[in-house]
Length: 153
Image 1: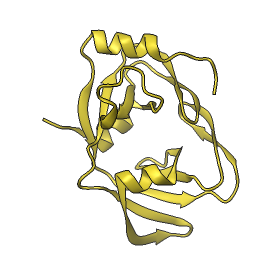
Image 2: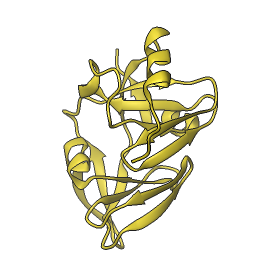
Image 3: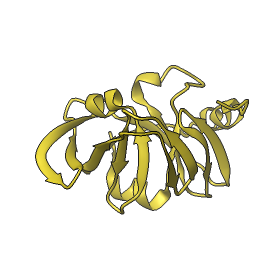
C-alpha cells in the first residue's frame, strides 16, 4: 500500500454533497485466481493475489475483488463460460455510495493506485456511509457506471 491519501478527494466529495446511494444491476463473471496476477484495468495496473476473484463486467472490463466480497455482493448461478462463473447481484445487498468527479483524480484502493478520468465515479461500500475515508474505495468509469448501476431512491 502506498502513502497516497484519499482524504482530500473524499472530503471534497462530502463537502459538495456528492455521495448518492446506488446498486449494481448487471451480472458479472468471476474466476478464482490460481496465482498472483497483475491485472490491467482501465484505471491502471493492479495486483491480485491467488485465491482472490477476477471479475469481468458487461464491457469485458476486468478487476480483482476478494472472493469474500464477491460472495457478499453477488449470488453464484449455474451458468459458466470456461473457467468463468456467472454471478447476479445479491437482492439483499445494500449497494454502494457513489460520487461523480468532474476532474481527473486518483484513489488508493486495496488493489493499488487507480486513476480516474473527468466524469468517472468514486465508489465505496454503502456500509461505509458514516466513514469519511474508508480503506475500500474504487473507481468506475462513467459509461460503465451508467450501464451497470441504478440510483436508489
